[in-house]
Structure formats: C-alpha cells, structure tokens
Length: 215
Image 1 (cartoon, rainbow, N blue to C red):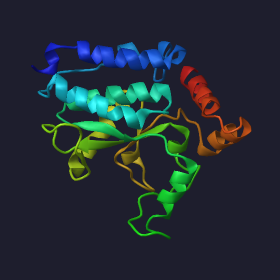
Image 2: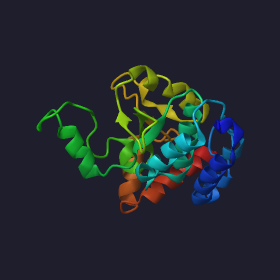
Image 3: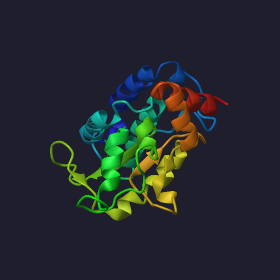
Image 4: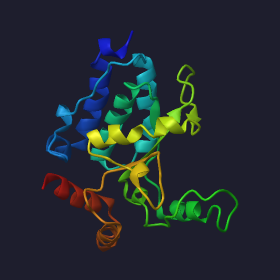
C-alpha cells in the first residue's frame, strides 16, 4: 500500500512529537506557519512501513534535541520520502567534549577532518542541529547508513527551506550536506553566553529561540 492511501501512521507519529513540544508546539514556530499547516505530502511509492522505519530509526538521534526542531526534522524526513529519498536522523545533540574529540580527528588524532568546530562552536552542542543520513537499502530491516549518494544529499536543502530549516549545504566556509539547524538568528556567541550564564542550561538557550521564532 502506498503511503498516499493512509495518513494515520504519520499523524500519530507527528502528533506525539507535537505533544512533546508542549506550549511551543501550539504557537507559531517560525516563518509565519503553524506546524499543523505544514504541507506533509505522502504521494511517493515508499510504503508506510518503510517510512515508519525511517521515523523510528531517527528517535535515538533526536533525544535531547530542541523540541520544535525535532518536530520539523520528522516532517522533513517524511517529505523527503515523497521524492523517494530515504533519510533518517543520524546525529542530534553532541556534548562539548564529543565535539572536541571530533575536531581533533585528522589534526591530532588519526582520521579525516570532518569539522572545523571545537566544543561550543557547533549548534549540535545546543540541541539546535541534526545530521541526516540516507538509508542505503530501504528494503532491509533497520537502517543501512550510507553516505555514498551525494546527489541525494543535494536535495535536502529545498525541502528543509520549505519548513523553515537552515541547511549546511548552503554554507561557503565548510559545506555540510547532511546538516540542518534551527537557530532563529541566534549567534553562537549569544548561545554560549546564555548557556553559561544560566548554569549550562539548554532550556534557557531554547527559550531564547522560542522568543525569536514567536516575534
């Protein structure tokens, strides 16, 4: 059965996500659109089970992520399946220490350089960014993480923009095709100050993003 024939599985999945957002999820969350007005289209040929696998496989990566971003990422993943693009959330929040370890890769430790950001220089530290990775074989159980199809990653940007997300593929200094974020004009310097002044509170950083989205 094509997912154009049954919206119930998606409505249940995203209703749960919206409930977890709480008050923020019930008000305008940017770009003058409400979540329930976003155009979640289910017209592709992927089955309900295949789409559900991508949504379920994203849950671990979305733990601890800014709730409004979590809802938008689930929407983005679903909309991408309409173009036969099976993406799932691979990485959400990353600690300052984890970011420093990643930055050292290819510099002071073995491996390829994958980031220019040290701890506190990435939106992942504030739960405001998520990396998507393609499922390389949707017919198999679970998600087969694949970074091989570069053309597929290039299509994330347009779908992300439609729901108010910024895509790392638009950056010039360090292009990051799997990356999407929701920062509402907040700078990293501002986020770090709010975080430190509030005793390392992500909730206070999120509250500032809430305020800007609602303005």
